[in-house]
Image (tube, rainbow, N blue to C red; front, side):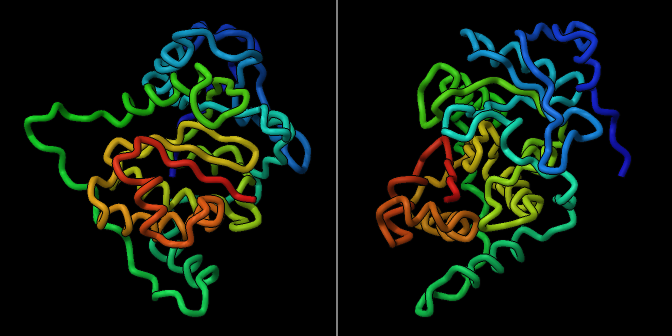
Amino acid sequence: MATLPNPLPKLAADPSGRCLGLELPPGTLIDATDEGPWHEPLLWCADERAVPGGWAALEPARRTVGLLPLVVDIGDGHGGPRDWQLAPAEVSYPGDHDPEEVLADHWAAYATADAAPWPGLAPEASPVATAVPAVDPDSVASGVASSLLAGEGPLKEPRPALVFARRSADIPAAIGWTGPADHETDVARLCAVLRSWEDRFGIRVVALGFDHLLVSVAFPPTTLAEAEAVAAEHVAFCPDNLRQDGDTTLRGYAERRLLDQPTWHFWWD
């Protein structure tokens, strides 16, 4: 499948980004992988925390040159992306995987002996009432990212970043992110699930840390039944979420973490 050339190398000669129609703060191009330098930059990361309006300054990159904004957390004890053991050479293509097969495989691998069979994918989010203005997933993502960069939420030291990716769900695969390696060694398989969540719930990948992922959710489940169905997918996607939640039931997790929630946060131990 043909792709546009990666515009990130242009930032080596013009760190301000003006050649791409951007006005970037001081930042660094990251090409470090677990096997040495990659043949092209995997992402650009700001050297400092964003000032107010910093996320908005990155938005034109998505619309004009195919660079997607991201927040990276460098304060969780594992350093920044240069230290994350990125492994793009070990990643397949997200479109080659079926999201339900991926989730069913992990459900079977991590379910207890008395667990129910894999229940299948949750239905698409209920349509928003026609009286309510249409919800734009990118606008929801922008609001979540701005809050994270302002110090609200679970990130320790957030920095704005840019990644060259076809769509938001592909960001982890595009940089060869290895955060879930103890659960899934080919992150493209999890990106296939993220693609499905993009289509069904309007998610956007907003933030990555060494071993955690945060997405915005434009159309979260609004009933407990819907939330429980999504909770099963979360358990297959990231079993540690249920363990860390302190409740072993899908219902409890769904009530606290999914019902009407605009963000989903995943953390692999």
